[in-house]
Each structure stands twice: as structure tokens, then as C-alpha cells.
Amino acid sequence: MEARTRTRLVTGLLVLVGLPLLTVAVLRTIGWDGSGWYLTALLALTPYVVIYGVLLAALALVLRRWWIGGIALALSALLAVYVVPRVTSDDQPAAHGKTVRVLAANLYLGQADPAALVRLVREQRVDVLNLLEMTPAAMSGLEKAGLFQTLPYRVLHPASGVDGSGIVSRYPLTEEDYTGDSAQKQPGAAADLGGGTTLEIVAAHPRSPDSGYYQWEQEMRDLSRAIGEHGLRVVAGDFNATVDHAALRTVLSRGYVDAAEARGDGLIPTWSTSAVPLVPLDHVLVDRRMATRDYQVLDVPGSDHRAVCAEVQLP
Image (cartoon, rainbow, N blue to C red; front, side, top):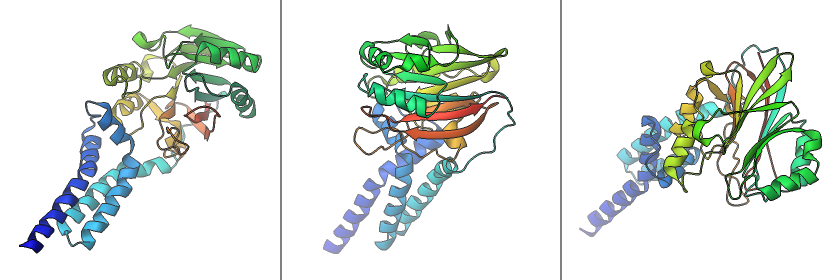
């Protein structure tokens, strides 16, 4: 009786430990982000859950819980199907037009080092810079550091907390409403590249789901206008989402590609609350008619996010 009880206890513990794996596999497959931040956060860890599932399967098989091990392996394989394409580069569309370098940086409530960011802009030869969590003090610091001497054109909406955003450019900008109700927080602008060529830019920063899940969903929806409804567009910033979230995949389905995935760098993390980045929440979404020539993730001293930079070429 004691051995049977021990056997049931081990089996029960393995089943309990396997619930996160099952939850992520189901949510990812049916395309639902859950109804609260805890499930949203769990989905962001999908690549790690693949490893977790393999380890769980190995443990179950060692303990001769064959059916648990088999299910864990199957679920891990299913999730791997979603994850593996992120590390393989894609073929690029034919593009022979102007090349533009776009960088998006979350300033972490304005605490990012302005001099370091300006230096990064110059080193990377950035043409368009999207700024998130841009406070009035941060804007002043960037001005003193010489940002507007390098990128003279701007559409700026500084605000306290996380709501301030802006676009700074080497090219003349005309502010446009591309994101409806969240246009103040997620500004848009048309960049005049010269020769009659215009590139539409959106600084994306949906609210974090842990501070407002339904507002996060709504602000993500504000980004998902089909490319057939507008001109060539790049949407870059802190999406507070990974491609394992259905909300972001909906935006992508409207005619964009993730620059990181296009270059095979889709698993490089951009955010963490510690010194070790965990998940890629920052993205550069590129109109699928454009080619992604380069993609980099770059450290920004003073910020809890890493900046993302992509070089795109227009058709």
C-alpha cells in the first residue's frame, strides 16, 4: 500500500508540473492570450517552455511514467514548430529603393542615459528613431546631448510615466494619425525621403498587460491596419508582446514581417527586470513589400530594455 501511494504521489506531481506546458501549448495553438496578465506572461516564455517540456519528458521516462513522458515530448515538439522558424532567415523581396535605418528605444521612464543613446544613434547611422517612455526631462536631456543636431525633425509627445512617445528623424516629418484612439501615445508620422518617396512610421507602445490587459489588447488593435489601406510603413517600438502572443500575430497578419525573424534573430531577448534579458518584447515590424537588410539588438545604459535597430530597403 505504501509503495502504491508513493507511485500515485509521483505521478500526481508529474502531472501537476506538466500543467504549465499543457497550458502554453493549448493557448499558443488556439491563438488566445488568456484573459489576464499571468497567462500573457506565461506565453512570453514559450521558448523556455519547450526546454522545460523536454526536461519534464526525460524525467517522466526515467521514472517510467511512459504516457506522461510521451505527452510532454509531443507538446514540446508542437511548441518547437512555432519557435524554430525564428532562428532561420527568410528570403527577402526584391527591393532596389532607398535604404533607411530605424531604431526604437524604450527610455525606462526617461532614465536611459541620453548621451549614450545619442552616441548609439550616431554609431549606427540611424535615420529614424522611435522613443518610448519619453518624459519631458528625458527630452531635455536628449536635446542637450545633441540628438536634434543629428536628427533635426521630430514629432514628440513627452509625458510623465510610461505614456510619452516620439519620433525623431533625419528626414522631414509630417505627423499623421495612424493609430486611432492611441495616436497620442503611439504617434505616427510620414517621413519625406525625397524624390517623391514617403515612409510611414509608427512608434508602438501598447500598455503592458500587467497594468491594463484590455487596454493592451485595444492598443495592439490600433496597430493592425492592413498594408493595403496605407503606404509603406514601419511599426517599431516596445510592443509588450512576443510573437507567441496572438495580439502581435494579428498585427503581423495584416502585412508585416518581424525584422528579427526575417534575419533569423527572433529569439534574441530585449527585456528583463534584471541584468539578464529574458524575452523579445521590442520589435521592428516591416511592410512585407520591403526588404530587411540588417537587424541588431543594442544595449542602452539606464534602460530596462535593449534597443532594436533594423535597416530596411524600399521596393
